[in-house]
Image 1 (cartoon, one colour):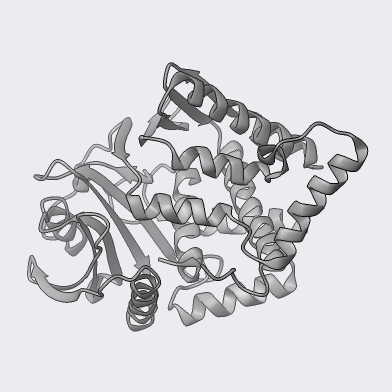
Image 2: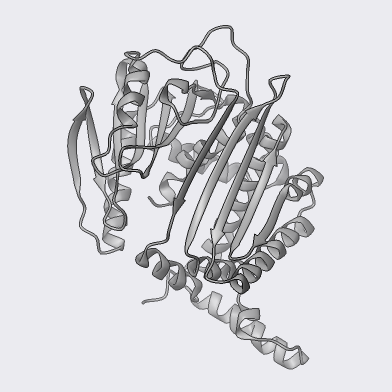
Length: 384
């Protein structure tokens, strides 16, 4: 999917930072929220209003969410059929587990005043654009699972398909990345959302989810191409950096004139696999803590040390550039370590404030990066 779905997935990522609440009875929405579960019967959709309110005010204060951006985001969300969480009830949650195929299934469940036809229209358009851009053949088909009509979008690069369906009577939409033909996680999720299957009475005290993937050949090619100058202004900036270094007599290499973010992407393109591990648990006072770990397996111990150094430098730069103490504190929670051929980036978010601040940090970086790239590449990508 392209950036036109950014608002949807930004809201989804907010689930990692949602606050846990107490409730007297188990319900699909509004109870004690666990953002990601492995058992569909543990599903409990989180109200995004509190987090949305926090992000709105915090990003506005930082100056990265001005009136024009707020208006544009609101218009785009309405076009996509997504309600404003600050003004309307909007709940969401994930089910992530390995099905019969042994490959991970990731299912997003969202509930609220959604406009299904607009969401489907957006996904249709983005899917066709994605396949056209990558010389793929669109494969959109219909199927039926547990009595529900679903739309399937097949992908040629991976043995996966995206499944989309709505449950109108529950004001719910389900969107899942599923191994082709493996509905073993989707089926019980549909039953739970429909109310045909009862929720587990006791919510688990901890949830642990892990998935591993490798970059496909085409994905590696796109990362490498992205590292090349994509616009005339960007190329001039790089050439200017080389020229200035030479005039000042500063030792330099081609790598040193390439922006840090691009050097990081270059190293990632050489990696063998990425493992994402998510853990959620509560303490004796029922306070939630979230632990995320990204483990990147590289080609060699030397490559691991190089990537660790680049990631550490990026974290340091972000902290030095930020004028906000709370943002510095959030950045300081990220740790990077290497062990043999593996590099592991982790962050522990053990308070509601830490969770909210982390999401604000991620959102702020996304906004700043898109603004910079739009400026540098406003004349379009260089012809391949």
